[in-house]
Image 1 (cartoon, rainbow, N blue to C red):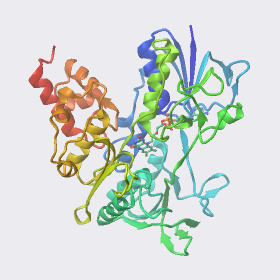
Image 2 (image 1 turned 90 degrees about the vertical axis):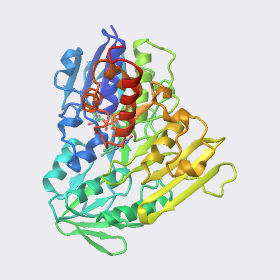
Image 3 (image 1 turned 180 degrees about the vertical axis):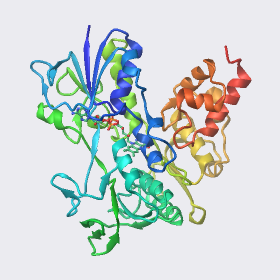
Length: 471
Ligand SMILES: Cc1cc2nc3c(=O)[nH]c(=O)nc-3n(C[C@H](O)[C@H](O)[C@H](O)COP(=O)(O)OP(=O)(O)OC[C@H]3O[C@@H](n4cnc5c(N)ncnc54)[C@H](O)[C@@H]3O)c2cc1C
């Protein structure tokens, strides 16, 4: 029997164990995780900070999961060494080893943020359930809080804290927010919208010095009051085990299309892995990689290859609807693409669409959920955009082929927070989950940001109209 050992019980490691067991009842699976908790959906942590979800409801597995699936799960244990010659990790033997060690928060080099190798009192990272518990315990109504970093996670943290009544300032080193996913125009509209929700911004600013209990001094000398500093300034792939074992590492652990590292018995998936052409730091690539690797390790499909993932990013922040996908940085005057842009800052709306060969190559849709839903469908399915581009941008175009749930492929992702596909919803419905709450319970769809509720209701209507539940 093959022994698969997975280091890291986060979103990638947990998914891989599920995928392996689904394909093979006998393969030996050991999974070791540093955190003391069962794996949870890290994507939903901002909803925990916002107080709209409990830590318990983010869990990916319940307490019985390991025993029921015959998995040797070791929580609260950090692997310190891979012995490639004896094929063991801290003495645990493997035939195939999978590194799913994720990433760790990057802390800006401001004086005083770190003390004796640890975050100083009053400074908290935003990566784990324990970080959320610390933020929840410390953040009080009316308290001045600084969030370091105006990327996706920083904005989600800021919105959650503002919702709790904190006086939030976001300090961001770039001239506009979420520069990975947004162009300057969209970043500006987003800042304005969030400003109306009480959040302040210091853009083009670096934290220079942290004064505990008092605040931050920025690089231009400005003082920003803060009794709590939340660090959300980016992540670094956790590669220390791989480096120590002599595997090839760049920004992440280098892997090929078979998700093999430079040692063919060792694989890497998720945030810690660096695959050519893949955007790291997002869950969809991690879960796609888990499926490919499970196919290979169980022999279900030894030829399976990972070729990259088209990523759609959604901001999970109350009162702000934002989706970004594909190539968003192409300018309106670009010659080899059709680029359309519409903005209405006073109503918090911004839409940009990049089309190549009549298909959606990229988009930013802020404050227009209907347009976001249609454009995302067109992008996911690679079908031609309707000729009435303006209607599409304004959310008034529903091309027949994109509108009908019947035409969506089974693999189409409906709930992005929980990565629930149409196929999973259909099979849950066939197993008796015929109402929205029952479907949410069975699949977790709609339990994240809630942005997929209309799509799930559309599927429910379609299922109800097209076939009896027991069919
Ligand atoms: C607040 C927040 C919001 C996010 N929102 C989104 C989003 O909207 N969309 C999106 O796509 N992505 C989002 N992400 C990113 C997403 O969560 C990650 O891409 C995903 O968690 C990667 O999964 P992973 O398993 O590779 O890493 P992780 O989930 O970080 O898991 C790695 C695990 O390995 C453990 N580990 C590390 N080293 C060892 C060791 N030596 N021994 C044992 N265990 C070890 C760690 O403790 C950790 O539990 C968000 C992240 C955060 C923090």
